[in-house]
Length: 119
Image 1: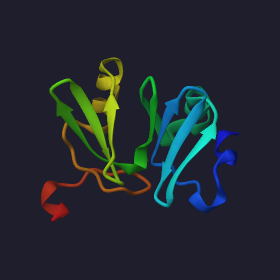
Image 2: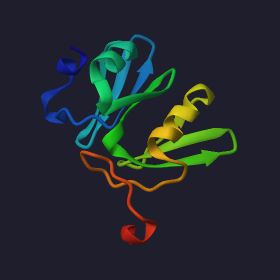
Image 3: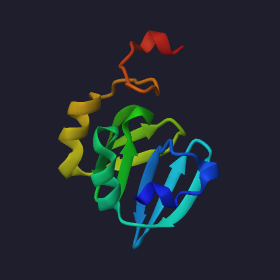
């Protein structure tokens, strides 16, 4: 399993994973690591807790704060502030799952909350 290659001090609460050739750059709330692996393995083993949003990016759904449209498409704003690009091919799926511009609180269920509750 790909997550067993993560250094134990990073934990297993994955925010995002980016593919870099035969390596995976993995971000958690505790830091970042570069490990050997394939994004297809991350996608196959993650189940509903994550989503492939680009050919080279996978995200942990509970860490999505919002989805923003940009001039070139859309980005997922993650709990660590990272902006992950969403491919044109996957944009409809991402917007269907998280909403268009909806605000989210990083929680186990990623429930939508009204904007007024975020202040």
